[in-house]
Image 1 (cartoon, rainbow, N blue to C red):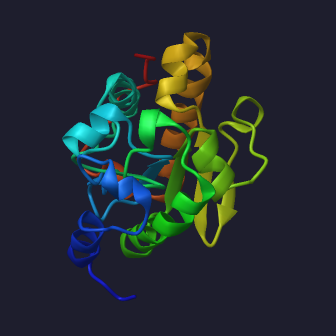
Image 2: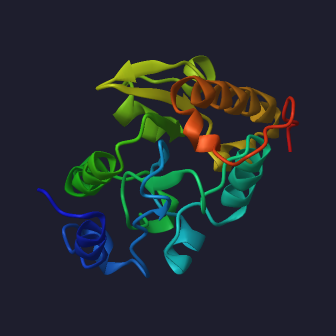
Length: 202
């Protein structure tokens, strides 16, 4: 496949490859800067995302945005956010392997087109697929590995932080580690932004 970003998006928005298409309100393709060097990947849309057609827009998304802002990242400017599956699994259950298999090609094409230098996996399911099938968020969060020339790290899913706020400081440490990795690998992410001292946890 050698489609452009817009061609890929158009194909994805009309996808009928799996039964999730029958229950969705919107395909949640992704949001952000298609030229970004930093990409975030979650597992799939929830209720708010399905209704609005954009990833991470509910309470968890609002928390994610605050964490991003603390390290001078913004979904409208210098990062890209996508999901493994583009349609909401019923009742926010985990996506089934067959659903991931039918949908993952869209994410793979997004990665090919965007060519990120850094990928952050939000939550266990995305990290298990992208990093290590036995990934344990509580033990391996914030640890960097390099795969296919891309620096990758897994961290807590924002929804999990809402359920267990005690992990917020650990998640924020991961964001500080991300900031340092950006300054090391792709400092142009912060072009035109004045970085002021050590960020504070939101």
